[in-house]
Amino acid sequence: MAKKILTEYINVPGIETFDAYRKQGGYTAAEKALKTMTPDEVVEEAKKSGVRGRGGAGFPMGMKWGFLAKPEGVPRYLVCNADESEPGTFKDHYLMKSIPHLLIEGMIIGSYALGAKKSFIYVRGELMYVIHILEKAIAEATAQGFLGKNILGTGYDLELVVQPGGGAYICGEETALLESLEGKRGNPRNKPPFPAVKGLYQSPTVVNNVESIANMPWIINNGSDAYAAIGIGRSTGTKLISASGHIQKPGVYEIELGVSVEEFLNSDEYCGGVRKGHHLKALVAGGSSVPILPANLIMKTANGEDRLMSYESLSDGGFATGTMLGSGGFIVFDETACIVRNTWNFARFYHHESCGQCSPCREGTGWMEKVLHRIEHGHGSMHDVDLLVDISKKIEGNTICPLGDAAAWPVASAIRHFRDEFIWHITNPYEASQPGAVYQGEMALV
Amino acid sequence: MTETPNLVVFTPERLEKVNKIVARYPEGRQKSALLPVLHVAQEQWGWLSSEVMDYVAGILSIEPVEVYEVASFYTMYHLDPVGKHVIEYCRTGPCCLMGGEDVYGYLKQRLGIQVGQTTPDGLFTLKEVECLAACGWGPVFQIREKYYMNLTNQKVDEIISDLSI
Image 1: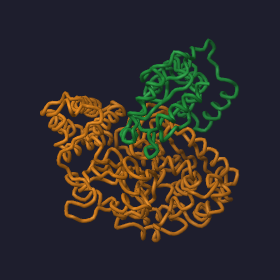
Image 2: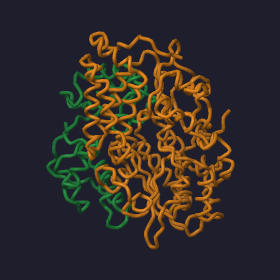
Image 3: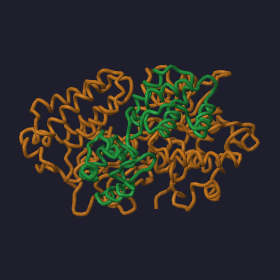
């Protein structure tokens, strides 16, 4: 069995309660950090562990902590990004509802390291039932002296606030999240200044994903060296993968980074293989934003090496033949899936979620959706395929936040790898627009 | 169908809840309470009329337009009257791969309404939403705080029957 850092105790009955979590060694890391370590020592451990942002960007968490400005007399904030909304991703949802104290303990450790006295967990509003679970757990932890004034007699005070969102994917972008937390529309801010200097209420702020923070208790208990020894290369530790689509066993799995895609997809420990009687056609490995890859390229790199579930291996080959680990939203498509229809669906998502501040994204996402809609519904023209590529290029890199890129990549990659399927839709409009119609031409199935 | 209330005041329990929410932000940052307070308002009135939004603005000492611009930005806030149960189904890719389009088609047929409409008895309003972060358990819809997952036509029948009583 692979090493479990986040989910080892997730199936223990009652683990959502303080007592059950405590019985499994919960809150010993918070005690250790607050009683025996300086804040800088905790930051150092985060750095040495090599743990990278698990929300999608993959930026080293310890380094992000190191950037935090510490002017005298100005409050600092730690904000947990639990606005999980990337299509294909549901790991934070699963983690928070199942073992809320793990995140709370991580928040205590992180807040102590950064010198934050008030920290926030921003949860997407749709997950109101999870907010209730977190609030109950916070009340328990406060009653037990792990939150509030003078925690464990150390003189350190921390208040933890759970903030609901209102339904907006864009608030997963950290500066949009901060705007939202200030009670405004979720419009991303221009950077610089970065949140580390001017974040929440114009004060120095760190924003970290749920899963990133939830790694801290284990790192403090077992040491950064032990953490860094798990995984492969610069992809240290474990990763929660949200597996969905045409597989035997959809769900959330914790993997050691570096397990092969083939093993993750086919072994009974994880997805259990593609649906019985079907074959793998395509795969989105890291949430809807990352490039979709055809079956052959997701299993092996262009050089014929086994593709691994790690930041480096998944991006091997760049966007020409590779993709990204992203948020770990692993969406599997078998031969019954229509790539054009799915691409239109994703384009509609990004159009719907664009905040509208930057014109390339506001106009471009809607344009791509319209063009894809007409191709899917039998009204496309040959010119449309290159038009889509052109629009995607004009969005990419030309917006103040990554939503523009996130909207462009799925479209560009679908055309890069499945151009024939788009052309089939255009040249066989009647057939292709029938419900359930799927391209049957030559393609590499695995 | 909920009507615009004549008297816009939080119930004493909700007002206490709202006061607790407002108190958790630093001094002078009470606007941070806006999103959570709008959720409480929607819980009480079902939707956010301009009277309700003005009332919330007064509580937080902000301009009404600051409430309108937020309420219209986020998809969870209903700016028109809704039925007793608002069914919000996920239309995004992974749920569709799991047969969502067929199930949602059945749901519309069963209710006899399209997206954005409310059944004549005022019981159900149907809305389409984007990814609800439950992709492995799709197709999914949400009614208030509850997630209904791994939907099939049969499950849709059961849920609608249960809620129609």
